[in-house]
Image 1 (cartoon, rainbow, N blue to C red):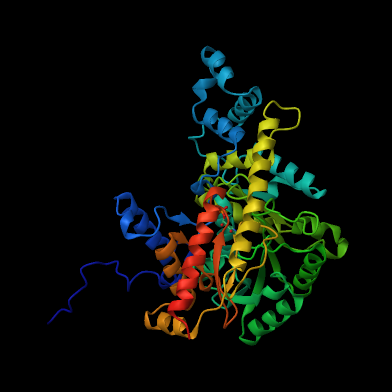
Image 2 (cartoon, rainbow, N blue to C red):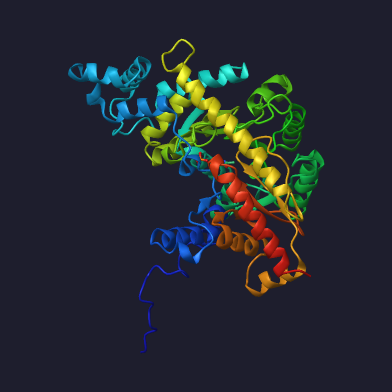
Length: 491
Ligand SMILES: Cc1ncc(COP(=O)(O)O)c(C=O)c1O
């Protein structure tokens, strides 16, 4: 009897989980891989092959990769936590010469609560830190928060994934997501085998959210037979930078309430607010609480992170989510899921503690802390304006200003010949443009197709995180590249 030849490997591309293969993550996609190759080339001394000598990563909101300095107080506490022998009496004099007293005291208190950063902690997050998070939320919103409803996580990403996993019960579950969106959402939906129900943000209205869009998107989903269970709002927006008005947020809550939809509020950019008078940040929790008893059972998950704001500690993987009006038995299940991973990393939890309890006015570190935060904030604001002006000067490009977050999402209009050339090369037109930009300028941005965009429109996303001194050179190179690109593919 002849035996069929078996493949050499048990695990092959064909035999792995098909949902894994469906995952796409543009911010770490082809552009980013090509940028790494270019960096490698430059580091080998091959810069003569290019018009630039550095690659600038504008593809990902990773501030410290682009030389943003960490907040001194945060690192002082973290370093003492890492090496607690520094706090022994015999080292005290030397340590006091190097560290401010409030950093020493904070580390001592945290060590008393945590023990060693090398030990597993409570799966939901260290109770002492969750108490501080609850206090922070109460002070921010003016409404109570319960530490038992707070889960510390490995960045907001892990929290979002846990909640989506919980909500997705079958492959016909629909989750409403903005278009454009941050690809964490489409990637996670692909992985957990649920269906995105897209609603479009309005570019002409500063990427505002029109409630009629939510209604039509929900009915489109329902007409396809989808069981739409949750709505994701990213506020301030990524990649769009929009910041919702309080009135708009009330309408969104009302919509979800009427349609029996759970709200997921991704608020990781809550301190990246550049027009604070016109567009201040409001948390969904606060707006919900202000809406009174009719909404007292309204189910909300809110996410926050140490990766953004003026902190930018992305690599520490710290974050939290808060459950509002979530059934206690569901919270218990979330705890069970958290305990499968044992605990979020402890240094990330410490960073959450520092984020929610920064130095107070009376503390020795306050002046330096405030100066560092203000400098980063003012610089981000300047950079956002400078870069949007730069984009708006390019022929056929229009770019809304950033009300918040760290990104601009300019719209580009490419000649038909460029679009045809892209198709011939097997690329999306915006991807084709971004690859050409990377090769000509060393600047790595992400094509709009990675975030979703209205049919017939093309965009790219760029962070405005590179150091200010690089901006002028970057704008000149971009201008030259853009003109040459248009010239080459002139209709
Ligand atoms: C909107 C949004 N949500 C979540 C995240 C994930 O952040 P974290 O580093 O906390 O996982 C990001 C990161 O860029 C983001 O832009």
